[in-house]
Image (cartoon, rainbow, N blue to C red; front, top):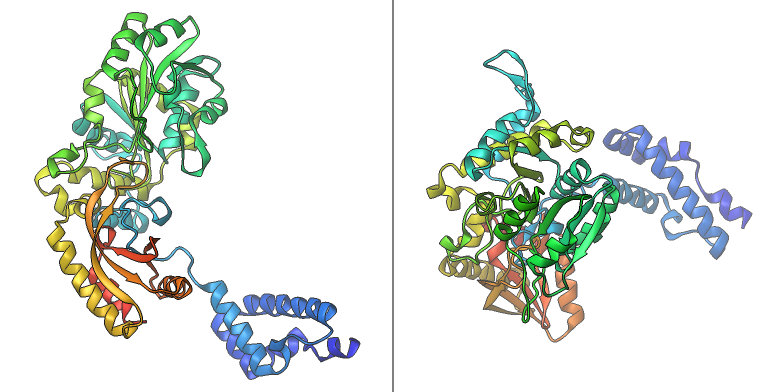
Length: 461
């Protein structure tokens, strides 16, 4: 075994070979030294266990091939662009909303340049970084004021910490939701230092349940939009307008976590109806929180709109600075919101809405092009068909609703071969992500952003 150990080269010997010198030029001295040491450590462990040299140390060509492979793998970008053909438009695992071109340009400009982030150009003095966004949000929603944090969970935390620390928050038992990543409303309440008061039952809650729970320690009444699940059948819930009336009677504010946060009525586009922020403000809710990267179709942000006096207290809380957004996010959000000022062109300019409103004819045309290209590249190894499909909005929006779509399906008697193809598609320079269902690989065109770049990627097969 000692002889085997002695056959292993030193790091210095590896570096002084022509191959080693080339690796240093390509990847840098530190990176190559680190990977050499790691490879030698693994080789010693392999010898100790198997009493033989690992295959990649039987000659120098294999050794440097292994080193190069590991260095390339280590330097490969991990957060990379993919083709979304899952049929889920706002796919949380794939980054949710695509940014509009205007938002991309605004964020890029903010990254490259100094910007008037907290500077009032008219007054020539310091201002608040949320001011420009607040003006837009108030114009779009009818709210008195607004503030922005880095996501909607942070928005909920900020509201609870500001108004309910050491106090009680009354909420329907049927709205104690858990969303992706094990985010639970009760857990956030604990972190904010407030006490949860559950009222009603899972399927039915009445106004009297809220009234009976109110006492001198009640901070506010809370509604949470059940965007990522649906209770059907024998159900009853209390509307925001009824809750607002009770809150005014008892001098207690009402807060709504709207989640997905639509700023337009989606039904006008033939899509399922989703409550809008404007509707909640019109009903008199004191504070409404929602996400920026879901139905709004923009950046990841938590947005809070509502009464001026309540927003001012949120802005003054120490957590607000902890949770604030940077200049690029705020620039992207401002540009996205400005698109809503021209509603006639919104479906054309906002990628999320554009994907949701594509006609079946448009999707069928893309499906035909994709099917032809796949047939050429796969040499008839699989059965390819164009089929009707059902897409979904995603990110907790309208979980029961399905949107008609078109997909190219690939099937094969061997499940192993189909899985191997799926893995092969995911290994391309721009991975192609579909979904496996019913023994077929579905490539749903509803969620695809760009057919031309997809076809270029397919040519790598």
